[in-house]
Image (cartoon, rainbow, N blue to C red; front, side, top):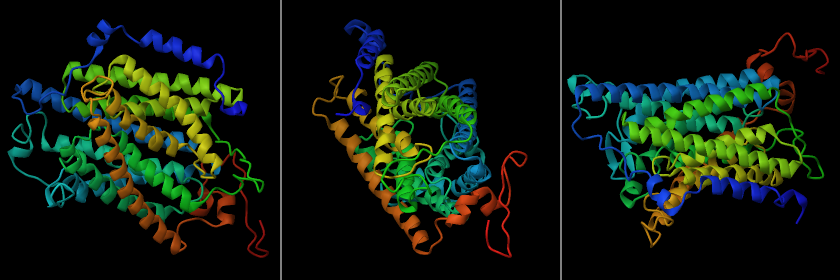
Length: 469
């Protein structure tokens, strides 16, 4: 086996030492195990608690909204400066399109307004509701109808944002926006309703607390199909098959983006408690933090071995990998379990990035590895470490792990089919990818006639007389 894929003599001891530090004794393990289940939101609450619940969930929604700024800066930082305007434009429009589509059909399709096909397909138009029932605890003892919509709407656009990074620097703008309309309007809501809307996966026992699969893997599957059908960027792979690194233009921007995402994840996971219960929220925020930290550390160690130098971009993706992985079971994990889940995610994300490069799937930001691969791992981890997981002996037959696998496969198949249809039709119409000249000039000029750094960027002026650059 080549040195690139061996584990160094110091890597395993380092991980073992860290695991021992976090691994509790049997007695301590019982003390650290989180409470089974989340608060009963339908239990009677005081007016003060109802107000507090609403404020927390609304604030959490605002934190999730901030994550879109994190995605925008991360994606633009890890790509070339000549495509920055295009990246920022797409991420801005994703928010606008996502909120409008979720308001038009998404919310009632996902939760749902009513079932067209029981447990499989929901439907309902619009979000306009009037009357006291939708503004008070008559809708839900935990929060108002509008609070519910606001928080869930902030999630909706995230799936398309994940796709944006994987197809960056060579996809046409308006076809991508068409994809966003259909992906956020249909794909995310149909599969989300299967679990969060009380559909067939929920009835089976599939568990995904805040969306390792329902949000992140859905975006990851779309990203994989988009990157495959688009093909790699010009110059990414040499004729002899070797990979040519295409450096991002601003690692400071990328680092800011990851830290913003980490901060926003406190709302993403913490808000998914759907109440201001102090015990549940504190547990979720701690497990989220531990998993992210472990992912960053193990990604640093792994990349140090693979490339002989510590790779900042891998560390950033390791943090995100830990966050994605813990999202499915942040409410059920003890501290040491969160560490193991995040640490393993930080290792596999590095090798996953190398794998996709090896098979010539060009993902400029590592979105497929972070969101798809680690989303799958996090969902499986619920069947291993969760309340009914194999490790705790709560489900000796392994049915929880089995239902996790069923959910991953079912949601993946539906998402892949829909993404193939959307991207495939656009490609067949020759509407998917910019031409070589536009890619060479950069999408800022070819798609927007703008420059992100006009005082520093070299721009090419085309001679219309000769047709030469």
